[in-house]
Image (cartoon, rainbow, N blue to C red; front, side):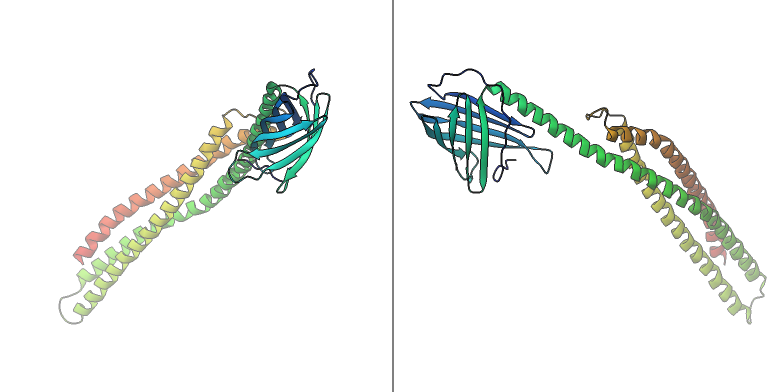
Length: 318
């Protein structure tokens, strides 16, 4: 990504190498805390051609912005003027001028919103590449720090989620056994109704009463079905949420075991390590609670299956 217009470039001077004053041909470099600039010139009797390269650390995101441009101009005594034409399509040219003093080029200028203020010294492309490598390392550090900051927050959040979910599970666990009791009570009520129905004499009012009892038995069966549907819904919701939490936890536990590429003495890294050490016991408690809940759901489902078989038989006999 190349974002260069509007920059004010204040570059540090570097150690200059000896150069013959007769010609500007050569490589000029400028560096700063967040920038590296390379200017390579060919001086053909005062006519200048060459290239300009700039690498700058973005102020808003961990990336390096680049500008590559062609150079064409002239030098007259200690005065230098050239046009800088970026290689990027639809980019505007800039006019740069300045002075030559010993091995130093002091340049200012701009165009279309871009401003340049450059102090460049005769050096080597290796010096430029070294600064670019330093900037790239800064990008890596910034990116790693941002990622780690996000992961620390994620560790704190997942621990809180597991604790809160565990408290809720404790409450939900107490609701499962009553489902089992309701299934069994419905079966007993249906069986009692069937027994009462069979004791009625044939004929007379018994026909209407038998029909009423039959309706009550089927309604009880329907209520059991609805109770089971509610149990299944609670089971599915718990399982879905617990799996999601465990997946997030496992991903963070994996990150905790991965090497971190930021300064080893940083407070952020210390916090990360501390959170990583705290996560496993919380995760273990959560898994145990989730297993207990799923076991209870499975037991309630088994009770339902047994009671449902009995209730289906009762309804057929009614």
